[in-house]
Image (cartoon, rainbow, N blue to C red):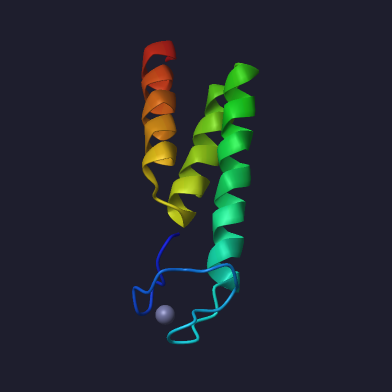
Length: 84
Ligand SMILES: [Zn+2]
């Protein structure tokens, strides 16, 4: 997240928007959770557990619909399709 979701101001190095006072703590916490789920999905893929990777991807996308997670989810879905 580079801009405040409330007023679109640039985010500086604190947990609160300098312009509107929006508290970023919950947003940052969600981003961290999505990051953990993303790396869990990668680890599951590495172990060959595609179903588990798919579940991690679905949870990550529900929290953070970023291009990186969408790309991994597409890859996992393709692997699911071709391994079924
Ligand atoms: Zn703001």
